[in-house]
View 1 (cartoon, rainbow, N blue to C red):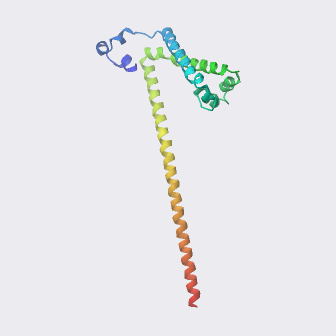
View 2 (view 1 turned 45 degrees about the horizontal axis):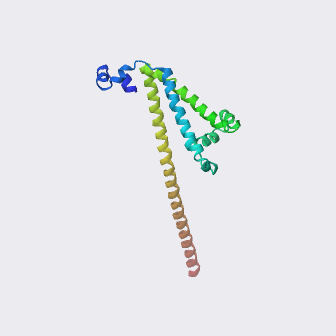
View 3 (view 1 turned 90 degrees about the vertical axis):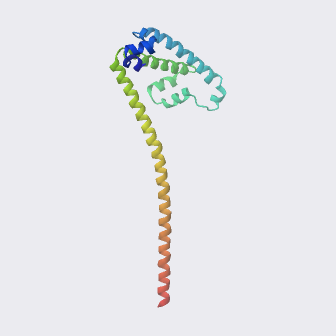
Length: 183
């Protein structure tokens, strides 16, 4: 969306993306309405396929995203609030909180559509965040691998050091024995 809306020339858009020329501004209310309908359909199908059809597995300990978030945020105010509600209201609260988050993030879309610099800052932040997350993942992954390798090498070095010490002490004992025998 960013490139088509803000970077391509009018002539190129007219030739390759004529539909984009019809959209001059973002219809905020229609955007909210359509995405809300899709969101609620998605939530209903998720609830049906995960929490209803797999209820036995959930009772046996299978973790769902809802259960994970309930435990992960248990000590935070929002988690305390959701966990204090009687069943089945925590699922409803969880869904409404997600919907509120969706509305918050969607409310910025008209701004990004209208203003190139706002969209540029947003896309740059997404890129930087993704790069940071990817880099820290690889640093953590290979850092742990490197630490395990260092620990393995350290163990090998300690074993060699112990063998060398035991050989030196046995040579000392042999030399002492020979010195006593020569006297």
